[in-house]
Image (cartoon, rainbow, N blue to C red; front, side, top):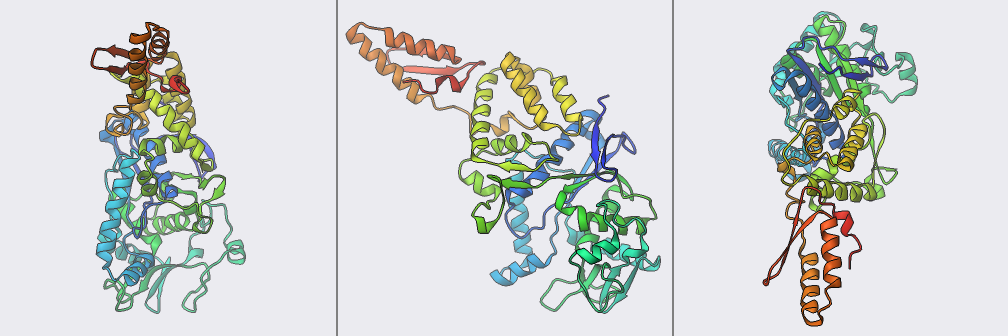
Length: 453
């Protein structure tokens, strides 16, 4: 069996992955708050952990892997959008979840085994909060329920922060009902115009952090194998998840392995609406950027390194995928490259995997290229509509006109030159009285036609 090594944020080192039970590998990844379109930064953890999901399925078997990614469908941002637009919260969340699933499918992400919505687990959240209060790790105050951070001695271990230093240097909400500035909200009261549920502390709604703890426990158990998300979630979200889960469940850990992907930039700058470089996945798709190209660009950078989306990378990715799709036409799928698997098993080294695909293409190992690319969600038939039927009409017209001229001048040198160039590029040349047809073969390389006149 392939040995997988993953960088564990908790231990700050790369470790051999050993699941709690090999027949039941479990992973939880924090999903989106559904109030608007997913921007391209939101797509990075989706693609990163989709890649891990694919690897785990390959190694342990699809039936032995459970992947959970949640939807936060109760949040103040959703409430604000409902107030601004006059639409109901249900309409907004339902529409946004639909958008999200469409956009993530477009970039080749497999759907997780379970996609729970926070509003479906309110009872579980209330039960967990009650358990925390009973054990002295939480308390009720003025319609709120709050977690006692200092009751959990390992608080800060994941992010490497000291509680006192955090109070001094971090922005924490100071409220009169808090025993300690670092205590965080588990439950908060709702006004009449806000969504709310009855609870022992009055009508209200859950805090953000308790959602994932309750859903993960319900679907994966008290302790599971991998918890993932963006680096921005490491503190406070994941830190708070660990504290409340371990205290409520009387466990020493919530997940064995914690993984975090780095952030995304655009053309070397932080993505920002004020800089005019903020765009969604749907924006790119609408501009004609194929989802497969987006995925290729993302996979070209290791997940623990900052990723820079640039127009140059997009262009290079599209050209490479066009070339590879031309090469694999009519080719039977071979075996996945061992070198590609080794790269993926080495802490999801997708950049190394892409390098191996380039090697396979250069070596003409097209069967292995097809299988290996499909392993990482590229060159699949259902993602190739953008590159199918590559437009050869301009080249076909060029050769047809050259032949028409040659029929009059009896000089076929230009015809021979063009035919040789097309054959060299991997095109089958079919000529008849009616016209010319150029058919890409397994070795088609579109780049060899660049500059042809």
